[in-house]
Image (tube, rainbow, N blue to C red):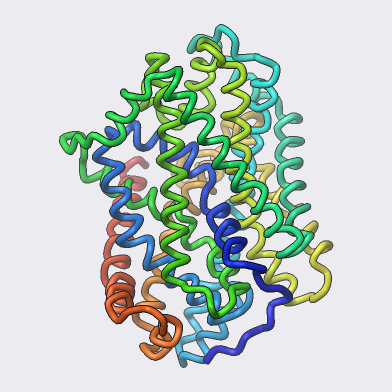
Length: 461
C-alpha cells in the first residue's frame, strides 16, 4: 500500500468534500462555455450525447483520479510518486503528477482574466449600463472595456488576491468554509434565474431547444465537441480531484462521490442553459452566437427586458461565483505541493503562488489590448495571441494528454488488488466497468478527440 504523506488536515465531513469538489468543477465551463457550445450544436441532441459522455466516461476517470489522490495521500506530484513506488511502475509516470500541477496553474493565469471580466460586467450591471443596448452598442462597450488595460490588470489582480486569501487559510478554515457558503449561493442564484425564465421569458422554447433532440443537427465534430466539453466541465486532469482526494478519509465511497460530482456538475450546466436560453429566445437573440453569448449577446437582453437591470446583476454575480469556486480548486494543487516542500508556511506560499499567477496572466490581459497584434509563434506561421496560445495548449493538448495518461495508469498500471482494496465496498460489476472504461473507452475516445483537434489546428495554419 502507498505510504501516506500525512496531509495537515482532512475534510470535516463528506458534505464539505463534495461541496468543495463540485465547486471546483462547476465554473465558467458550465456557465459560459456549455450554453454557447450547446447553442452552436443544435441543443437537445448535443446535450444528450454530452450526458452520455459524462456518466460513461467522465465518471470512471473521476473515480480513477480520486483513487490516485486518496491512495497517494499528498499533492499530485507526491501521490503519483508514491504510487509508482507501491505499484512498481516506471518513473516516467511522474509526468502525471507534474502535469496535474502545471496545467491548472497556467490555466488559472488566463482563466482569472475571464473571471475578471465577470467582475467588470457585474459593475456595469449594477450601474444599469446595459439599458437600451443594441448589438452595436454591446460590441462597442465590450471592445472599450478590453482597451482599459489598467482596469483589467487591477481586476485580474483582485480576483487572484481573493483566491489566495481563501487558499492561505487552509483546508478547513478556507476552502471548506468558502465552499459551504458559495455552493448553496451559486445554486440559489441559478434557480432564481430559472424561475425568472419560467415566469417572464420564453421558457417553453428553451425546454424544447434543450430537451427535444434533433439528431439531424449532430455531426461528427459536434460529438467530439460534446466529449471535450464533458472532460473540460468535470475538471478532470487538472490536479483538483487528486489533491482534494488526498484529504479524503478512507470511509468515503469513491464511486458514490464521483457520481454525486458528475450529477452536481451536470445539474449546474443544465440549469445554466435553462437560465440563459429563455432570455435569449424571449429577446429573439441567436443561441448560436458563440463565445460572445455571455458578454456581448446577453447584455442586449438585460438592457431591453422587464427587470433586466436586476437580472443582469444576478447573472454576473452567478458568473463570478462559478469562476471563484473553480479558481480555488485550481490554485490548491500548487500550494499543496509547495507546502510539502516548506511545511508550516502556507500563507506565505499561497501569496507567492498567487503573485506568479498574476504575473503570468498579464500576457493574457495584454492579449486583448496592447499585445492584440502580437503572435508569439508567428515566426512558425502560427497566428494567435498569448491568450490563444495558452488556452489552446492547455485545453487541447496538455489537459487531454494528462487525462489520457491518468486513464491508462489507472486502467493498466495499477494492480488489480489496489482497485479491489479501494473499491472493497462496491460491487464486482462496478470494478469491471471502471477498469474497462479506463483501459479501453477513455483512452480511445480521448485519442480520437486529440487527433481531431490537432488535425483541425494544423489544417488552419
